[in-house]
Amino acid sequence: MSYKDLELISAAKNLREEAGINLMSPIGDITQLVFDLGHDLVENDFGDDFSATCMTINGIKFTIALNTSQMWNENFRRFTVAHELGHISLVQHHAEMIRNGGLLKSKAEFQSNSVIEREADKFAINFLAPVGLFKKEIENLELTYSSLSNLGNIFGISLLSCAFRFVELTDLCCSLIIFDGSTQKIKYEIRSGLMKQYNKHPYLQGWYAPEQGSVTRLLAKPLGYDINDQIVELNEYYQNMRVSIRCNESVFKLGYNNTVMVLLSALDDPEDLI
Ligand SMILES: [Zn+2]
Image (tube, rainbow, N blue to C red; front, top):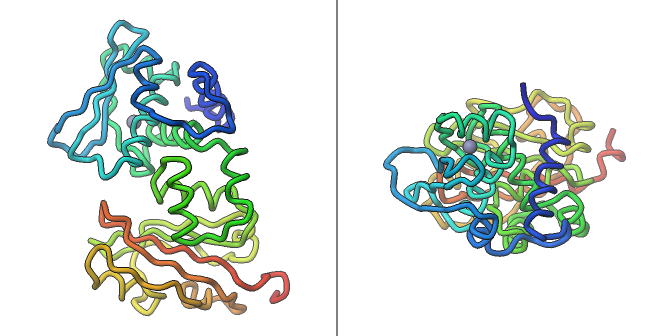
C-alpha cells in the first residue's frame, strides 16, 4: 500500500491551504508554521544518523523532534521539518503508524529507499516548491550551480532538492549525477525528460572512470574549493555514445554526506546532431 504522486501533491496542497499559504508563495518561517498548526517542535542531539522523528501528543497533534547532529544547514532543516509534516499529514500508514506507537525514524532528503520515507520527501518538495511556482522560477534558467543557489534562496531548500526539482520539471536537456566522495562511487543519476529521449545509455552507477569530467580533480581538493564550469562532451561520461553532445559541466561538493554533485546541461540542440 502506498500513495500515488497525485495524492502526495494534493496532501501538500491541502496543508498549504490549512496554513493559509497560496501555491504561488514560498513558505516563510516553517518552525512558526508548525506551531501555528498546533504541533510542537523540539531539537536535540540523538547521537544517531537519523535526521528526525515524530511522536503523537494526543492523536491529532504531534511533536517533531529534529536531530541537531544531522542538521547540515538551515535549508536542510526546513526540508526535514516539511518531511515530518508529510508523515503527520499522510493519515494512512504514516500518521497511523506514529499513533500506534511506531517510531518513524527519518532520513530526509532523498537518502532513503524506503517507500514511506520517499513519500514524505515527495510531500516535502511539493509543499516547499510547488510545481507551478518552481516552473515559473526556472523559466529562463540554465542548470548551473548559481541557478540552484538562487532557487535555494527563493524556496529555502537545499541545492540537492533544487537540483532534483529542476531536472524533474525543466524542458532542457540535462542530467544530474551524484557521487559519494567517501567511496568514490556514483550513487545515482537522474535525467530530464528531454535527456531521456537522447541519452539511452544505461544509467551511471557504481565505479566510474577517473577521467570522467572534473570529479576526480574536485575530490582531491578541500571543501569549499571551486572548480569552474567547463565544456565537456557527453561521451566523456557515457563512453559508448556514438553521437556526443556538448554540455556545460558544473561540479561541486554539497558540504555534507560527502556528496559531490555533477550537473550536465546540453549546449547543442540534440535534434541537430541525431
Ligand atoms: Zn521520515
